[in-house]
Image 1 (cartoon, rainbow over the protein chains, first blue to last red):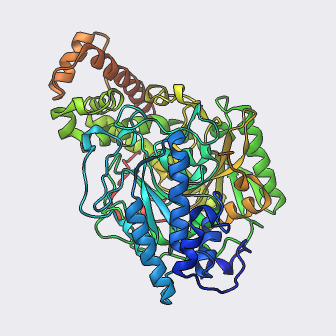
Image 2 (image 1 turned 90 degrees about the horizontal axis):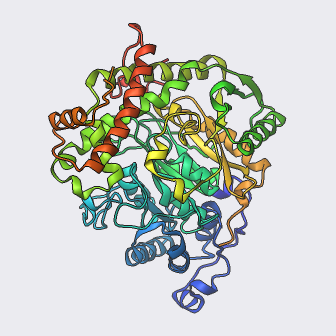
Image 3 (image 1 turned 30 degrees about the vertical axis):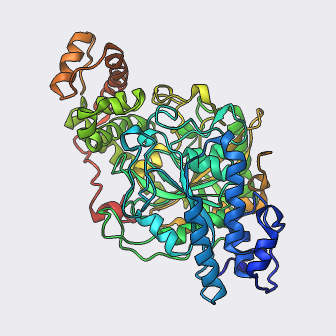
Length: 498
Length: 69
């Protein structure tokens, strides 16, 4: 299926071929077909119909990174030469009639937690500052095999959970307001896509690290079902919860990326050997008859900002107007998911980093160093108790999704945006209703798919996100509901003035 | 359930037994902040857990069975 089979795009389907001479004459600044916030799907259509070449697209995005990323700090490493080489290869393939699909020639970035062959993979830490892996992580390889073009490696919190500014790089800033953080841990993915640098970014999500930065950047982020996308080649954070997934501008873009990312990989012990559907297939189906569950006690409690509450209820009303049935549900144990997360995350992260944190602790920043050390002090029975409670959280969510509703909805975060000065790990780890991952943690623990889509702006002008959660391996219904909402609302088409 | 540790000296001793080696006082206090948060979480979960609760098995086919739950 091509993107043209789905929704109308700005690109006409007229056929023409580009030539080297045309490309040289036009250059990135003169490519009037391309705009900074164009979607992946629209760009793919321009490439497919040969109105722009992959080289033009790569040059356009590299020029944008060059011109604006010094104020955003989203890229750790820009792989300009490699990108242009891959783009030229894509151009040759397409000219030769070997169009591979909607990711062919599409520029993407990768959170610096994923290994990339020949490109340094730092995890945002001095501990791996100069590490150059010899192979690509499976999700990176999947995107490259579909002809996507690697622009570079984008920011992560140190080792996926530390501070944003205690490693070798400056803290990324939110493209909507430089005083705000894009949160984390896929902060570079959210910030770069929000700023129109690249069309797709590969992130990873343990307790909310795809959905939270997507929400704060006003873009779409999907944490798929645990086991759907291989994590082979991802530097682990918390094995039992880590998931790789896409951040992009729209639901369609995210679904196109997820098509490429999904599939069985025997090198990841949690990888699911299940058929992968075409996730774009049901995007136009609407929400008529879908039952959407809301647990007000946990997701609309006192810790929620009024702006967010109003925006998410408005989003639910939109879905109701489109034919969905909104139903109250009760998930009593999700209130304990943050406590379970605290113990599981700390223990697993310590286990992964044990050797380095005990032999070269000075190479870690103070925040992550303290956090990793704490993991050594959690007894096994506390880790297991946390897993027992997590199992209850998972069971409650799975039962609600099996017996009562098709989708669970909630805000993505309790507030819209967080100032850079407030974004310290110490503050993020504070238990309670205002914790940034309050809404996302329970679904990470349940292993079910969850998407964040834009649903408005706060009174201080920061984007807000709306989370839709589905049954395990039923990402299609999640995409279906998200696409229906997106079609009815303008938020995904808004972008920062940058 | 994790123990509440008030004394920084006792905490330092516990950290050393756990293989964390010598730390600066500043680092020790930072680790203790995390520890205190984890100990509170542990106490709340201890009150909640029952004999019927089994731990989640994360790397078995059951984990990825959409019908489980």
